[in-house]
Amino acid sequence: MKLLTVPASRGAVWVRSGFRIFFTKPLGFASLFASFILTAMFLLLVPSIGPLLVLIVLPLVSQGFMLGTQQALAGQTPMPDLLTLPLRGPRSRAFDMLKIGLVYGACSFVIMWICSVADGGRFEILQQAMGEETPDAARISFLLQDPMLLVGLVLRLTLASLLSVPFWHAPALIHWDGQGVAQSLFSSTVGCWRNKSAFAVFGISWLMVIVVLGVLLNTLFALLLDAPQLVPMAALPAGLMFSTVFYASLYFTFVDCFGNPEATPQPKR
Image (cartoon, rainbow, N blue to C red):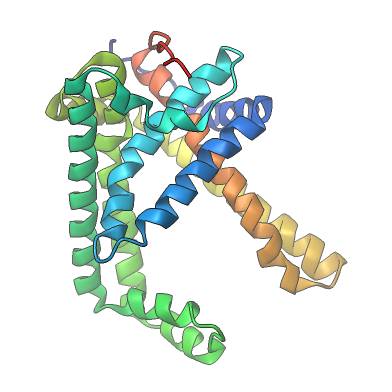
């Protein structure tokens, strides 16, 4: 594989390609995402380290979706077992995939700790307030007005974005190119940097999609149907679909940065 550079406009193409490939095999991609959600719910039941375990498997999930998109492009239906396929290859690559997950989980926890210190734990307090059976609107409004909360949110977004750069392509480079952990993190960083304008457009395009969805839902349910209470109910399935499409689009970002990977041999079912 070699590093490639593409124009900024490719960022919007990645988003469109994600939607297009999703609708070719919607049930297959939905099963992939549902398997991830169920796995995450199960891992969260593990005392103390549940959230860490979820973070550790995220690189594996992104690679599973890349394999799913690769299969869908070949006319095959993605299956849930793709999420574990990277662990069923050569032992060295499987270990590297586990290592990349451990590093990602550790870095994510460090970021959460830094941000919690920066905002004095206000984000966690807000989460608890919003998660109550009967949320106190006045208290939530008061918490949202705290300037330190905004500082923490901006810091979280900034650090999470920076962390995503070295890990964006790392699982794919380990799985398809046989790179080690350090080399894959470096290659991913270089690939993202060389195509930073395309990734900026990619992020802006997704932001526009979310904004348009919000406007449409509020217009439909709040203004036309006079049922604003239905907006969250409609936003949930739409959000799940968009999350699935986002993961499906990751393959196209990899192809434009490093070229087409070879087709992955499928295990016997």
